[in-house]
Length: 487
Image (cartoon, rainbow, N blue to C red; front, side, top):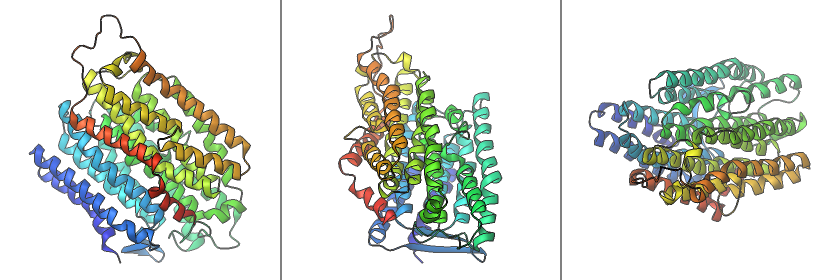
C-alpha cells in the first residue's frame, strides 16, 4: 500500500479543520489554506515519477462487501485530474485572499473551510479505484460546495444553491445509484478495469441492459453539464467569483467529466463501446450541447453567464473526444481536462478582477476598460484563444487531436461540428477583447481612478494564464499521462 495516496487525501481535510479552529485569525486561517494547498501539490507531484514509470499505486481503506471497497489508486488517468486539482487549488487560494478581503465578504472562515473540503472530495474522486469510492466522493463534492453557491445568503443565492443541489443529488440518486447496484449484480465487482479496452462486464451479458446502464451513468454524473441536465451550472453563478472558478475549473464540473470518462473507459471499456456502438452516438448527442450552449452564450451580456455557457459547451469536448474511441480523440478529450481548467480559471479570475477593480459585470459596460486594466484583459484575451483553440495556447492541442480523432473515426459530421463550434467560440469571446481594447468609453464615464485589481488577484491571473500558454508550447508533460491511458 502506498501511503502517499492517504496523505494526499487527508491534507485538505486536515487543512479544513485548521481553518475552522483558527477562523478568528484571518492571517493564520489563510496561511493554513495556503500551506495545505502547497503541501498537497508537493505530495501529488511526488507520485509522478512512479506513475510515469508504469507503476499503479494503491491504498486499501475499507471493505464494505466482497468486490465493494473504499480504495485509492493512482494511475495515469487519475494523475491528470489530481495534478489539475492540486495545482489550481494553490492558485485559487491566493486569488481568493485578494477577492474576499477586497470586497470584505462575510463568512470567510466557512468559505475557506468548504473550499478545502471540496478539494478533499475532488482528490478522492481523482484517486478512486472503483465506482463505489468515486460515488462516495462525488457526493461529498456536491454537499461541500452547496454552502459556497449559497454564500451570499440572499434570495438569489439560495435559489441558485437549491437548483444546484437538487439537480446534482437527484440525478445521482435516480440514475447513478441504481446503475451502480446493477453493475455490481452483473459483475460482482465495482473495481475499475486495469486498462481501457476490456471493461468489467463478462462475456454474454445482456446487451440491452449494458446500454441502459451506460445511459444511466452518462446522465447520473450531471456535473458533466450535458443538456438537459445543465441548468444548475448557470444558476450557480450567483456565487462569488472564486467559487465560480472552483465550480468551472477545479472541483465540480471537472469531477463530472472525469467521472463520466473514467466510467466510459474503465467500467465499460472501448471494446464493449465499439461492439454495442455506444461511442459515435454519444459523440453526436453531446455535440448538441456543444453547439446549443455556444449559441446561448452569444446572447449573454453578463460576463459570468457567458463564461458559464461556454463551460457547458467546452465540457462536452472532453466526452466527445473519448466517445470517438480513437487514440487521438481520447487523448484530445482527456488533455482538455487540463487545458480547459487553466484557461477557464483565468477567465473567471479576470471576471472577478474586473468586478473588484471597476464594479463591472456586463460586457456592454466594458468598452475601453482594457486600456485601464491591460494585464487583466490581456490575460483574458490569451485564455480566450485557448477556448477557441488557437495556437500557441493549450486549447490548440485539444482541437488538433479532436480533429484528427474525428478523421480517424471517419466522422465528417463531427469534424464539421468541431469547426462550427470553433467559429462560435470566436464569436462570443473575440468581441469582449475587442470592446475592451478598442471600444469607446461611454460618455461621462472616463474610468478615472480605475486600475488593476490588487496583486493578490492579479498575480494568480498571470500565473494561470502563463501555464495555459506553456501547455500549448510544451504539451508533452501532460500528454505523457494521456498517452499512457491509451497505451
